[in-house]
Image (cartoon, rainbow, N blue to C red):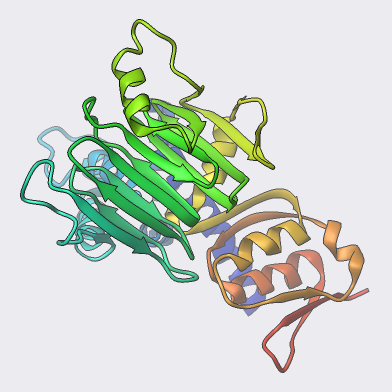
Length: 348
């Protein structure tokens, strides 16, 4: 078998594994559990690839699902028991991620329940990190991002200086959790949400659980806290975005809140698992997204390539894998210039 054929088979298997992991992330149906069992029975490579791709997933929900599906001990002979060896491996991956990937920053964990805390959290280009805050909230910080944390006895205030972050907010009705991004503020109403900042007037909010209130950043925190305390009687002063919805702010203007299909939700949040998913985006747009995770620059020598539609799963920062896919699937020639820029041209 040729190396190209082996590579294509491996990539196809990885894509299938990514699909199963995305399904695990949003909970498997009973039929899907059975289908996953049949898929795993096909070969040991299916087991190995699923574990390999799961190890890239920073969201521990997926690994918890794996350990639920494949428990270490089972008194009744079930589908799960037949894969107990896989369960051991999944548990080891879970322990590894808990001890290595999840960053419990000791300086953030306060001994006093409401101790004031100010801190900047950062990631470099191509880096992603998880942080636990003093109140039990979690931040998943994407590539090249900065979040400033300012906790007090009355407020939990954060500022997204640049980049993208996901927030899993611990409930505390006495202290609003507000993320300020440029001219806007996003206040959690007990929720999980993702914010990407493009500049001070352009950003995106994606809510995956609960609700988020959008207000102007100049609104006082005291007034906001009062409004939230009385929101059962009075309407909240802003736009409420609920689970499965996205709000886009362009040039400081809110566009209508839209409901996001599950597939798009998974695609938008794939960065949390270290993956990028494209489903028909123009190549030029896809390369802009890829560039967020690497210092490598791209140049489209042939202008017609800019509008070429691309689709596929890619590991964030895996430039070599991207170039192989572009060559094999889109007949694009690549050349690395002296300054490191990757030039893309058509073969034809």
